[in-house]
Length: 143
Image (cartoon, rainbow, N blue to C red; front, top):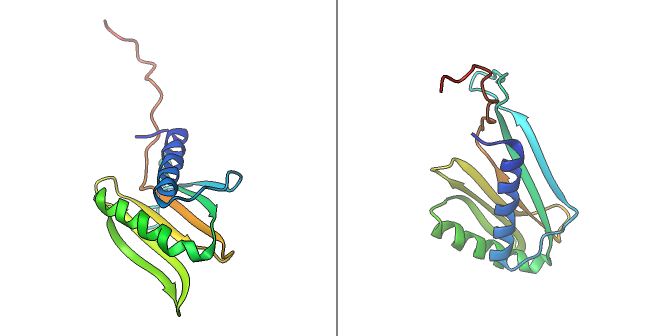
């Protein structure tokens, strides 16, 4: 269980930690939290408030620095027990970074990648389906 604001704060903290690890600075005015309802394996949509969060933050970092940044993030994530599912530093001899890693226990995904706007490095956190806290019951206590 996690309130939306708590999930967003946690994702922001995670992207800040990734940036700090990489030695880069996040662009303060470009952050994109996106909350979506949970969708089941048969495309059913949860109607009880469950949600997923995709949180994106960006760093205006020179393209030539992207490979080193994702290398540092990868080392940190592996040390934290993440499973690396995708990784590259370049395409056709040019910097074009991509890192996808999954935290198995918490079942969330983190990514770092070169964007179409070449100097921007995207740091993203995608959560599993989360349940917001329920409101306290209006049943009187017997205490």
